[in-house]
Length: 313
Image (cartoon, rainbow, N blue to C red; front, side):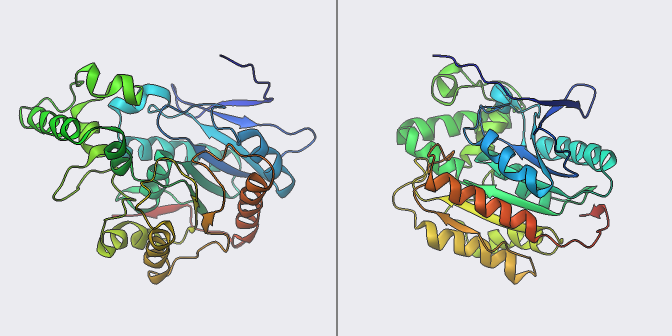
């Protein structure tokens, strides 16, 4: 059943065909921006805590801005993390031009975390940001393995691999592969990026799987740690998309270690969110804990001006 949501704000057109929604709070005009990217099938106002987060940030001189990428809603099926990162860079550039003295922090939920970590660690030249927050950085590969029977998972991997070999990587796989389960039609390329079959698990989306070696985390979190932006990881203790066999505390500790060992500034609130689900649907103490960690993180950011362009090649 549908619902109506009243959310005052400003719609910004940051490219000719992409927009971002800035939540407005009465009487406040924050100078700093927290750019938020949701996960698969998400878009404006689909994350339960969005309005609470906007209200929590405003007194601290931050606006919550929900970024609509080409991959929003069902668009992720024919997009990629690299494309998301490129579009996110244009959004960052827009708000840095709009508020040249303000801070910019990136925050992702679920697959949106891949966008944030990709922005902080992938090669390429793009505007520098002041911080990144990963809320529910779960492995899409491990989630897919939970959802699909093993024989189907293997069959779809083989189908997608063959299509790529045949030069049909951008062709959409049959509907039974993903539409009824994942909610979108998916190209062979994006399926392989998310499902990331072994033995190499080389999918571009495969950044948070629990079986990845420390060296793999060094190539992502470690690279991000060298580039100056602060980071906070918020991993939900009751995330239904994480296999029960995963030691969440050990996994987050390895991610944090790779970042800190490379010189990165880790937020004090980084770690496990007790009682929290994937999108923090809980209200009361669980959500208040989350909001407090985000507030403390943005307050802790260095006030010294930074070079606005990072060359990451």
